[in-house]
Image (tube, rainbow, N blue to C red):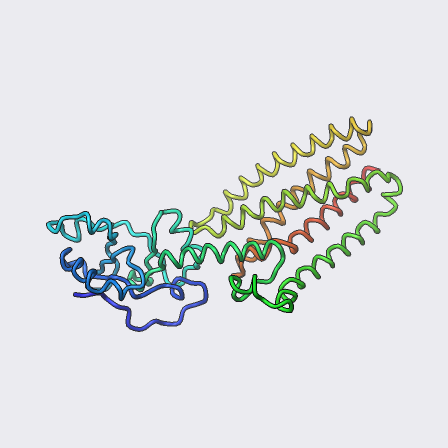
Amino acid sequence: MNTVATSITPVFSHETAGKIMATQVPVFLVSESLSHVEEVLRKDALTFKTINYIYFVDEARKLVGVLSIKELLCCSDTYTVEQITTKKIFSVTADTDQEHIAFLALKHSIKAVPVVDDSGVFLGVVSSDTILSILHSESIEDALHHTGTVIFEDPLASLRTGSAWLHFKKRIPWLIMGLGGGIGAALVIEAFESTLEQLLILATFIPLVVYMADAVGSQSQTIFIRSLALPDTLSIRGYIFRELKVTAMIALSLSAIMFIVLSLWFASFLVGTIVALTILCGVSVSVLIAMTLPYTFKKFNFDPALASGPFATVLCDTSSLLIYFCIASLIL
């Protein structure tokens, strides 16, 4: 039997294995001899889109073995296909997200990832070139999300050669949201004007409490979004429990440092207490927001990375200011 070709390609969703897989790959029945496999490869090498691996299927076209070109050339013809093929196969189904495919390839150090249907029938391969392209495009997409830029349809071309109007349309929406968040923060400060009048020095630390909450929240959110993108199933309960411990240690450490510094600096335990408690509560709330937003987006089949950038920043900044002035009002 010569190479097995996929006859009809169904319609697959965007950015899934079925959409990006190549079907022009060397596929043989597991019963074929190694000499026959090598002969076909030499004769038809130019007809294949990728030739990193040779794939072997049974009579039902189910994937049962994989062999690299290097392994083929190093083996004697006396070996059978069953003796030298890799039985532990890392494959994906046609509806697997492309980012998961790239992570799978990196995790197991494989150059190409085979695609099968739900019953294990071989459909095609996501090649090494495609995997590199996925990693590049996904890194650009995540960076754009983080800076609050709407994703370009063709980022590789549009980032450098797109028109001014195109870039304006992609960048302005989130900036308007950030502007609204700034107005909201100003309203919070205005609502606690009487608190500020009682202890004007509190205004000095507004940038500090906002920055600390935002910084810790961004750290947690970036790690959580990357964890959600990994192909392995994430234990949400275990992850949250670990993150709560990390958050508690970070928040307590930062609060203790600020309490000591401000108490000594201003010789006032009052200021130190207000700022320290704000950092403790603000950091905790920011981390909660940082994990809740991506998880909610993921549940509704949206890219979790959409929850990063200005959207999360506005919520974290406003909540930290509200916490700051509420604590100050209660203590004063």
